[in-house]
Length: 184
Length: 330
Image (cartoon, rainbow over all chains, first blue to last red; front, side, top):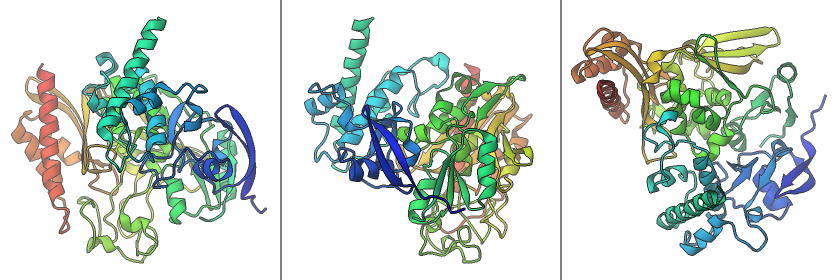
């Protein structure tokens, strides 16, 4: 039996369904950029080492360069094009603008998607490698600069805008906490 | 990249049937290592069997108080699990020390065990490599080897296993469960990885066509006081140049029970049995910790550029066991 090396798949991206035939070798990153014209997601290293291609898959951040498109069928994918509410920027996008969390901007879509997830992971009580005591009884650590640097370490910035990126993530996290408290 | 078929398995028998029918099939978990190696041509499967929808994504406390971790549990879900963090904190710390948030969300624990070395010669098709191309030679022995093995290596291969998670699993006597078309099987982690010998291309004792289904940690009260410490060339998001998982139970200044495993020093996570034997029943002092490290590292064989690892591992043993001893006295 000759195996088929391509499939017709339906991808759910930013709430819209896209049906397309793909060679199985196609990564999610290439499907987004080359097939669906969603070029906000950037190709940096294409080896899972830089984070420029970060998207959210079922709400969790992932590098789209190591995710096969065919394996992404049935999952909810959110790209940088899908994080704003219409004209209303996502608070993380706004914070990156307010605090100059970039220079050339190439890594920024990945940084923003990653930061959105970092804030949610922290709110959900996830520890990190910077957390002194990971035991659940120790509670959730403050989202300090050290915690942000560790949690964002999968996103490289060749311009070196890290100082502003950390500040932007901290500001967005703080506004997220205020919103949560206001809603409570 | 070679063209390949793709099948998504919905149950274990279905996955096994697919794997059995195609000798060049590979299991696709998160793909964080496999897809990368396929891009460069190091891996050339004819079929990928995607196992992420198999019902193997749960972490359960076993009847005897251990943990059973399904093979498709992601690294993130493993590290955040309250029972893992409470009962085996070094395991949570080890997983959190590896890769990035993005990769931990994708990677599975079964795939973590089967990930390949990051030796640069293994990844470079223009170079010989006994692991990739048996009999072709090992350029690392005389070439770039500052992060290569000091324990258990041979002239045929000096690559190290890159896993952080595996180091903690080794310390806690993990057992790997698998299924084949013939039935189920188990391999203690100590027997899971094969010795390098003259066949570095043969890495695990897993039977052909087998699917890892779970990793079981037996109950280990000592593990509740455990730590993972990792040294790398940048602060985060890098492989270890040396790491250690340690658990310690000190009573009245005497080592009642100790667990020690080393990472990034051998072709597999390295359980430091000699050091454990040297410590058990003896005083919990820095001198004893250093002597125990020396007992383990007496077998070390260094190359011109990786001798620093002997000192590094010795220092890690002393530092981490001292820290755990001080914590116990608080």
